[in-house]
Length: 301
Image (cartoon, rainbow, N blue to C red; front, top):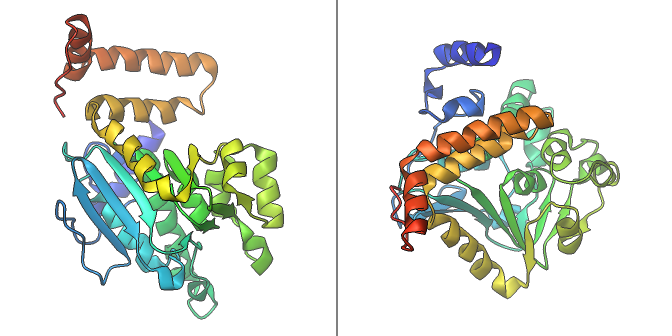
């Protein structure tokens, strides 16, 4: 209750935080800045990301390979805009985040982190980055990372923040900030919640990369495939998600993350109520009736 009161106070001070019924789960840290995405059409090349949507799948591509798809403030704001665009639309079922070039993302742009930029700018960079990472978890639809090449620092954080991550066998992951005197503290939040503590700390303390197979072994990735099969396998997963009920998946995703930090009894209490709520959904009953009647379900969305 205290968190909700605090959120309402924050929203009152920052009207642009009113993003719809799923917005409270973002803890009031997101902004809908930026242009929209035309269905089935890539966005203007001037933006550091490209985005288009087709058949319920929104593709967001980090498209600044000359700068190793660094998560500059401009890149973060563009990514945030693409993630937020029509988040409540029932036409949206799943988001896939990928990148152009041989590097998925090299993390923050270090040129933006010099003392010339100043404290206020640095604060905006890391706050915006945190907003983006939380938006992914709190988004009403699943977010899938499609990773080819190196993902370091905040780039690794982005992968760890996604609900599902599929990588090619050429991918690698690292949190090398310690080597330039900037410990990867914010990447550690997502990394430490995804891989075992001792693996995360070895990555953070040494900055040494791990291979895609090691990342799979430790839980950073969902699947590793040959490079030539990466897009095919990622889109197979995305299409499968897009084929099921959005309301059911949204309810389940929110409940999954809500129960994770709870003790066992509380987790079962929360998820038991979620199951009851799920049964009250139109699609919950439609799925059961379709199973009983041996037919394909017709989802509301």
